[in-house]
Amino acid sequence: MCLARLTRWISSSEPRSRQIRRPGFTIVELLTVIAVIGVLIGLLLPAVQAAREAARKATCRNNIRQLALAIVAHHDAKTHFPYGGWGRGWVGIPAQGCEKNQPGGWIYNTLPQLEQWALHELGGSDLASPEMNAAYSERLQTALPVLNCPTRRPLSLWTVSKGYAVEPKPYGLVRSTGRTDYAINGGASKVFSFTGPPSLQEGATAQWWEVNGSATLNVTDITGISHLRQAVSMRNIEDGTSHTYLVGEKHLRVDFYETGMSPGDDNSPFAGYSLNTHRFTAETIFGNEIRYFRPLRDGDEGSTAVFPFARFGSAHPSTFEMAFCDASVRSVAYEIRAEVHGRLGHRADGNTGN
Image 1: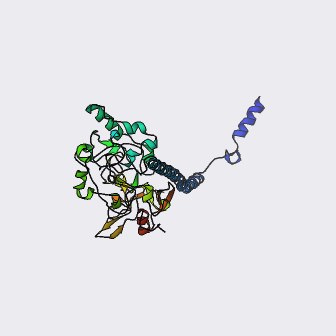
Image 2 (image 1 turned 180 degrees about the vertical axis):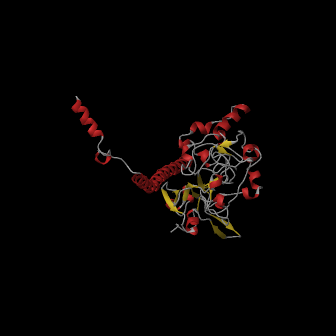
Image 3 (image 1 turned 90 degrees about the vertical axis):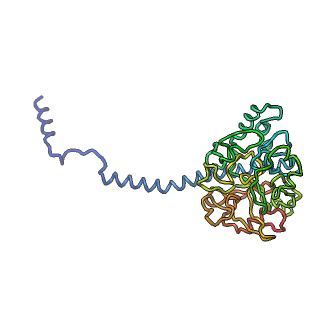
């Protein structure tokens, strides 16, 4: 017993240099490891962000494909592309058909082809006024995933302009609505915003439209696919369906994403003709002079851009998505020549955009 105690005492009395050290990290080694991890995260982060953007863009591209197929299906059923509606102050009315007498625009008119028949039929003509208001408001406050680009903003309801909050006719009163990040091709001319007629009765008469200046349009006046109270058929696309824009992404100022302050993003997708649902590639000025609109990346509108709220574009960094009248979808670079882009929006200028 004494020998064992002596052995333990001798062992505990040995110099520290002769004792066994346990493995560990010095501060320098720990800092080095942290630095290496930080570098690796810095290298991986752009790749992760790029992968996420690729997924978001794929979703956006699929949305445009669905819209293009719905528009073409509408044409196959009605022998014409969807009409543009009466103006931003109107909403779709189920009993008004799908042509000149329909106040709602192209998105409202294609709801059946988007498998949204119940949404299209909200607010039938047999409801009393309070019920009508509730039904129309329900539609206005519906946000559809197929109309949302996830790169730009999440699917949600967003504030409308103060003017639009009291505009929708004949029913509905809302302070926020869903949005559309996509617009149909209005062509290369006749860029304007329009509220619409003061009543359903006046809007149903040709005389009212004949005396309202810029609102007087014939099919020959528009160079795109859909416009105010107008739409064209496949036979009107003289440049070929694979060389004419149908529907695509629209430009929007970044600081207006949520505010409803942009003239091209301040009302419901189910409203009539407006810059919210129609975009343009050029306009005719001073007789036959053409001013081409190059597409814009969100945030790149600049102070000199004419009608930035009337242009195509997107929140994607290098390209935006456009569907053509044959329902094909292509990525278009922002650097596309303005004239080429402008002519692709014109269905019958004798140029295929090459």
